Amino acid sequence: MIRTVPTTPPSAFRNADFTKLWTAATVSLLGTQISQIAIPFIAVLLLHVPPFQVALLGTLEFLPFLLFTLPAGVWVDRLPRRRILISGDVGRAIMLTTIPLAWSAGVLTIWQLYAVAFVNGILTVFFDIADQSYLPTVLDREQLVDGNAKLQASASTAQIIGQPIGGSLVAVLSAPFAVLLDAISYVVSALLVFAIRRTERASGGRRERGQGMVIEQVLDAPSAEASVAAEANAAASGGARGSTGSTPDDDRPGIRREVSEGLRFVLGHRYLRGIAATTGTANLFGNVMFATYPVFVYALLKLTPDTVGLIGGAAGLGALLGAVTATRIGTRLGLGRTIILSIALNGPSALLIPIATHDLALALIGGAGFISAFTSVVYNVSQVSLRQAITPEPMLGRMNATMRFIVWGTIPIGQIVGGVIATVFSVPTAIWIGAIGGLFQFLPAFFSPVRTLKTIEEAQPAAA
Image 1 (cartoon, rainbow, N blue to C red):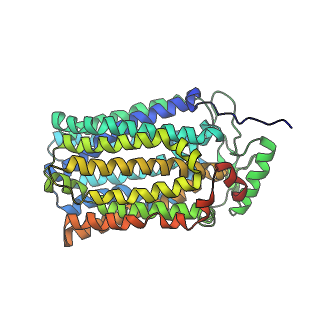
Image 2 (cartoon, helix red, strand yellow; image 1 turned 135 degrees about the vertical axis):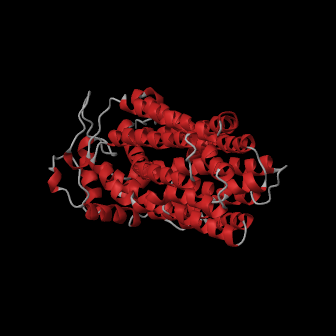
Image 3 (cartoon, one colour; image 1 turned 90 degrees about the vertical axis):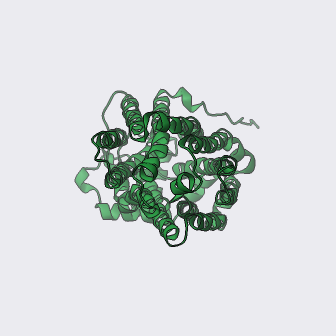
């Protein structure tokens, strides 16, 4: 009997289009780290707003995930995803540029920051859903874990470098003008995504035209068997369109029906619903805790932007370690155990934050961030790769939209709850409640079939 030796898929970096996508993400994320330091600093120390209004800033940034995520998933499945990515980058660059312009004119208010947060939140809804749905177009299925790990490593490296640099830039340039560098990073990202040559197949039979061949990619190759699998999955999910035939735009079901298909697919899926509940719970309590985090570090602990940047850099270091080890951890422990253990170990680290003092802040909050970021990245690499691999291509946008609606929709709720608790009681009380609640975030995934999985390949027949 001839035994086949499993081969390691080639590195995602050997794919030129993935390299462009990865570079775009790295540049954009580096700029984002600067704004994450600068904008809360503007609200707390330049505009002197109270804790609830600081929490409201985060609420408005993530409120679009509750309001627009589900219909956005339908449009991401209908429209060329690369164009959505470019439009999202350009739009966010324009909005961020208004902050230094308004500051220079002496008219910057918290209301403008709210408007920027909300509009950029809408653009991020479309961008993030398109981004996760676009990756399987650029990479083959067996490269998804490697690709997601490299993107997580990119995010981690950007945080390690960007947070300390962001703190220094806020001190040197002033916070409003540091934000301008983030706007520039979005422009660079848009140009890199524009340079990607590989075309994608749009749902409903439409194709994005461009140089190179048209990719009729479904996540289960080879092609004949993939078409059967895609049709079976589409039927199971309520009749999702978009196998290989050409369907006129006006033959598509309405947005409401397609939204319902995405909801049924996720909530009816034995693996996806447990992951959604766990991630949503983690985000809920995490944002109860971090709604007024800028007030905690700047106003109560009296930390400088440089120190806050170093704390963020420590978290980035943990995230980088998680990104480079996630694949090996998943191979050694098995996919299900990796998902459960990583999210279970994530919660207790937050208990270090509310006991921090001015002198111990870097050690305690930085240590908590390191542990939390490491476990979060291992969890995300594993569960996002699983989601992408078990979802048929025409359903990817709606699946990601439904997941984002559930797991990011809890973020504005947590922000409001954290702001109310901080206003009625105190900022440390809100942080304590969020940290304690996070201890139980792993339970939905633990009590689901996810914990029995060993590999992604094992999950695919069950999903079909």
